[in-house]
Length: 102
Image 1 (cartoon, helix red, strand yellow):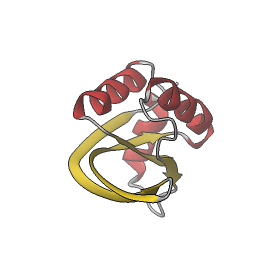
Image 2 (cartoon, rainbow, N blue to C red):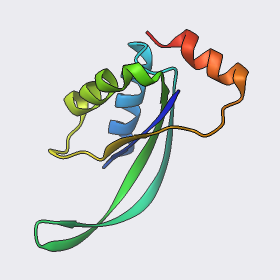
Image 3 (cartoon, rainbow, N blue to C red):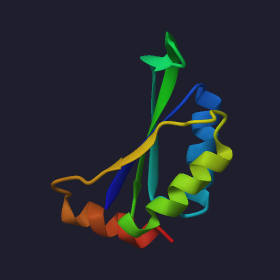
Image 4 (cartoon, rainbow, N blue to C red):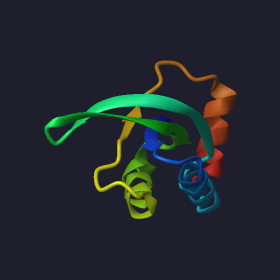
């Protein structure tokens, strides 16, 4: 199982991406969190913006398709997307993720 993290500029976009990739069974579950305040370099300037975080649960082998789909749906040219491997996962939850992903 992987936890995929991504950010979106608006709640509407975060909800659209989440709903789309769950409906397409690319991920088993999506959670939208925020808004949070992000501070980052873009070009030669420090910028601040409100963002919404996506926490997506999928099978490890599905990550390339999840990433590709987020990029297709996202409004940013360089969206923040990365995955993390949980050290421990409750076995029933892990089975559920496996069973609901494509």
